[in-house]
Image (tube, rainbow, N blue to C red; front, side, top):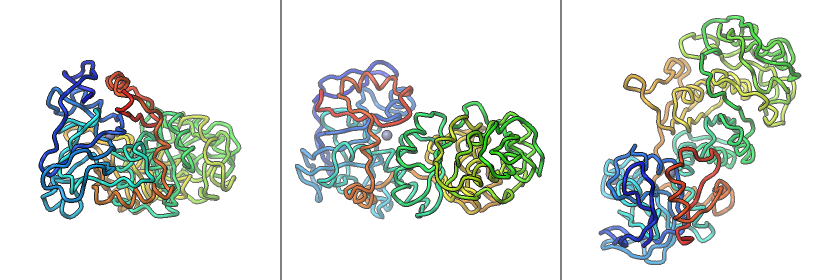
Length: 467
Ligand SMILES: [Zn+2]
Ligand SMILES: [Zn+2]
């Protein structure tokens, strides 16, 4: 078969003929019809994972069973299938209870063994891991579920239990984040998307995000935080007509006077950084879908311990005056310093979102997500957080004081796929919209080494049959 082969870490990859795989006992061989190219594949190429060379990457796949190994009971040649990127052993208590996503003996195609950037791929423990792809779901759509979409689905449904009418903050509008936007809207929730790239936010809006916030890349100075009830001074808000006698923005016109610290009730000496531009304040066209959201004084002002704790909800400069509509495009005239994101989310959502997802995995994005929550909110950490001094840093003071739930999410077991596939088959979810381009194996080989610089929006799908 032809496959994309890595012979050395961090070196160019080639497409060449290799031996066809053989179905292992309990497993199958699948002819690959679609397989997603993902940042995780680049990590393996770059040497961040422990892979045996030569190696074939690829873990987001869909195709047709062409060979069935001994002992497989549920699958036959010709079946259309996909598979989670975390495959369970099929024998342990976790697998037997439908939680193969945390199997201690888990395997991941494209990491622990050869993956799907090839015409054929071998998959283990088929009775546990394979998922039937309904006739109404294309291979491209099924493969696009493989890691990012399924991860987002489980994070929101199985873990955070997001409900209709609730607010969700998604930090990071890449593959997982955009999937989360689509899924949340299908569930009837309202969404604020945060990203550093305008293009990613445009994609989020196209998928139905109710509001978007463009984060600055070099912020995080804690300008919004601090203690007590300070009265920041500064030049932040810019001129605008967003209205509202908001405490965030100061005098009445969308943050006009422009102190993110405002007149004090949203807390924080921090506003005092004084150069905090406040997106949306400028144009005033209602960041928020919540009329009057900003009316109140800031809840939670100043526990003073967590970064941004005082930053709070930054009551309403723009939220108040213009009820309703106008999701956010006008909010983008200026980027929001990351330290101001939680305050903006509190203003938009009338006190904070119910659920937040950090789809990036940095100290800043995690803090933005956690601090964007309202009291008793639920945070799901999906992006892998880098350690600082041995462990990642998380604003635990807020977690404790506001009784926040911190949840982890790691892929999704095959047992949970049918509910998601049903939503796709009936059109409520359309993951194929997230696919930006389809390429062949040769182009995939050329893209893999530069995929860390890939565009932030949209998935790249490989069709091995294209050559
Ligand atoms: Zn297991
Ligand atoms: Zn992936």
